[in-house]
Length: 440
Ligand code: ADP
Image 1 (cartoon, rainbow, N blue to C red):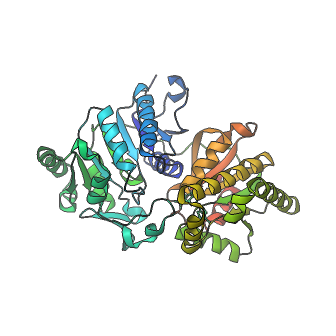
Image 2: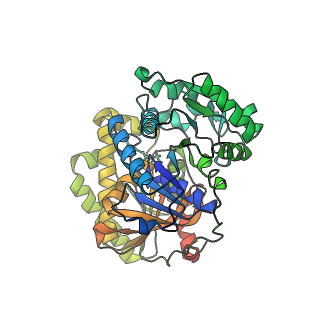
Image 3: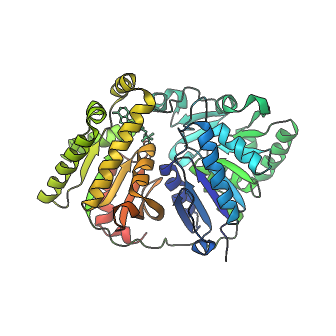
């Protein structure tokens, strides 16, 4: 049995797909699983990397730790040589975690007291300079992320933000690998990391403002038991193994079934995508939070009937169901129902709608929002995803079997809130319509 080389633990489902997509792009044969699976090793034969998708970003830290450790043990038992903890490229977390607590737990598990982290992904306009994270030209704390419903990011200084999440009792310190060292190449990076380690730093935020920076970092991190970061740095790790480049991804079967979009993301990007879809005359239904709270089952039934009726009239029309709203309405909803409860009820409603509509024949499903995707995929009973053609950077079409709906496989795209152009929804279906879902 040829064992997987790299094991990735992703703290949300869209992030996992993003990482798997980039690894496939870098030539690895990748399997993405939903949590850990009771699989024998033979199912992973010939696979270079396994990405385990968790929904651990916003759960209590203790829960995130136990899920991540379980995934780490499962991956190590399958022989992986390196563990990557995949977080969001906007470092989505709260002051309580979960990035810091999970990294500390993984370091303890792997008996390793040094970990380099960077969410930078210059191609996607996420850069880190002097430890400060920029989203495009804006500091993280001035970007749309300051208003995120669950993980508002108010400090762009990642050294400080990560330090604040660590357990003071363990005394670990966060240092900075600055851009001058990174740009000087992998040898300079290794030398600097040695110094930082000697100076007593256990975690290091690495600057990266250009793609080459990630390449240098990737090379320097060869053999590190654990590395953490976004979907940029992970794509720089395959160069450390002699992977035979898979020039073409294995084709996905042709798409069939009704076209459905479920959007629970409230990011500015998703708001723009929903507005664009509506202004183009798209068929859409807005789910109002107050209705979901008071009469959840009634809302689910009404929306399902409405969507089915649209498809009866016009079977090829994509139908959008969304709770996506702007910052001020999100705040109002949260003030009324509580942040966690609001998120949970909306996610549950959207997931119930998604499952019911897959049962009714939806076969091409886009879910917008990381947490929303996680909940939907769980509800569908998906165990693993095959990565297909890329719709936009970070978002591939996938192919999956939802076991809770009878086992007919569907095409599935999990879109992180921040990803995709304004016309994303339409572009995604056009890609499948053109038959590009079949190949890469
Ligand atoms: P993103 O990828 O943009 O972060 P997520 O799905 O991860 O999107 O997070 C969005 C969160 O906001 C979810 O928990 C979702 O249930 C919640 N949400 C969705 N619509 C609303 C709304 N109208 N009001 C308040 N919260 C909402």
